Each structure stands twice: as structure tokens, then as C-alpha cells.
Image (tube, rainbow, N blue to C red):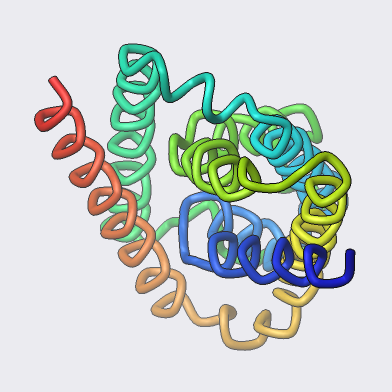
Length: 208
């Protein structure tokens, strides 16, 4: 049992820690201190549900329908390009909505933040690839009891990671008081989003 828990934790950590749209979004919200508890909770719940789906064997089922995977990838490409354009626009104008403000009146409403969190999580195809396909494929070799232990390890890491970067981001707040740092972050986000979109386009061309 302990071995499966540790195995699930290590595999989950190796996938979730990679820089991506979701992690950057959580980091930004943590810096802004905008409804960060709900952002972290939504990301964790989505991760928990998708990990559960993958470990329980749905990942292998989805792999039998390439068209479904391609549609998810196409939606992801459109979302990532749109997200990247917005990031580059913010960097160019130097008026990023990510800039830390001392005024609570400028904070986005909870509903807007919740919808943005769901979008950056559920419209990101890499979330499904990591949680459902990869983790699900690895867990497919385990028996029922081992799968539960594997899932526990993966979920623990997910919880620690999202709440860790969400609330730990405030430690970087003094650095992000400089507009130049926000510009660099916006550019970095845009580059990463375009890079992931390019990988998905390559996948679509190869699989078509």
C-alpha cells in the first residue's frame, strides 16, 4: 500500500509541477490575492475528479476514440492561442491586469475568477493528457486495492501543490511590485501558451 501511495505521489508530482497554463494562473491569482482559496479548491477538485476517472480506467476507454481526443486538442489550441495573445497584449501595453494593487475595489468578482479558473483548467488538453491518459495508463496495471492507494498518493500531491503555490505566491509579492517583472511574466506566459499550442497542432497534423 505504501509503495503504491508513494508511486502515485511521485508520478503526480512529475506531471503537475511542470509549468503550464493552470499553474501560472494559480500563481497569478496568488500574487493578486484574488479569491485564492476558491481558485486552489477548484483546481484541486478538478484534478481529483480527473485523476479518479483516469485511475478507474476511463483513460483506456477514451484512447479507443481518437476523434474525441482530437476535438479536445483542437479546443485546447484555440484556448491557448487566445490566452497567449491576451498575455502578449498585456505585456506590450504595460497595463497588465495582473499588477498588484493595494485597492480591493479593483479585484475581480468571485464568479469571474471561478469561471476563469474552470476555463484554464477544463479547456487545457494537457490536464486531460496528464491526469486521465498518462496516470490512467500507469494505474491500469494495478489491482483494485492498489489503484486506491495510487490515487491517494496522487491526490495528496495535487492538494499540496495547488494550495502551496497559491498561498506561497504572496512571498513573491515584493518582487512583482515592479512593472517590468509583470511584463516579463506576461511574455513568459504568452510564449508557453504558444509553445503548447504548437505541440498540439503538431499532434493534430500527425494524427489526422
